[in-house]
Image (cartoon, rainbow, N blue to C red):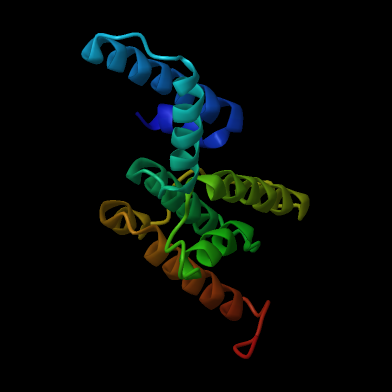
Length: 169
């Protein structure tokens, strides 16, 4: 299911197509159950509703775990950039959202790619694909917002220890 969720949330076109296929199935099922011909214009209405349901609903747990793994990967490799963490933290701090929603998923992934591009542009050529040891705890817990706060604190402590920032910043 994880690749399917990734496909849906990574592309607007894919989300619309999936919503259209589900809508077509709903209308076809309604025709069979009601034993009468329905207008397939309902497919467009159902597609519209399903697309927005996908975009404005919280992420599935498998994508939350993927984002937690990304945060652990960034910390494990000591990536100094904060774009991915900030995208998650801002969504978590929003009182209306209370977490990353479907339409923010691609923003977080794009921020992760920017973080990695900046990491390699800074002349760092070694990259370890392993996880931060504390990632396992957060993967079991599945709380993306708490994990983002945790990794943000770890990054802050590391940057203070390295002398790149001071405590007052």
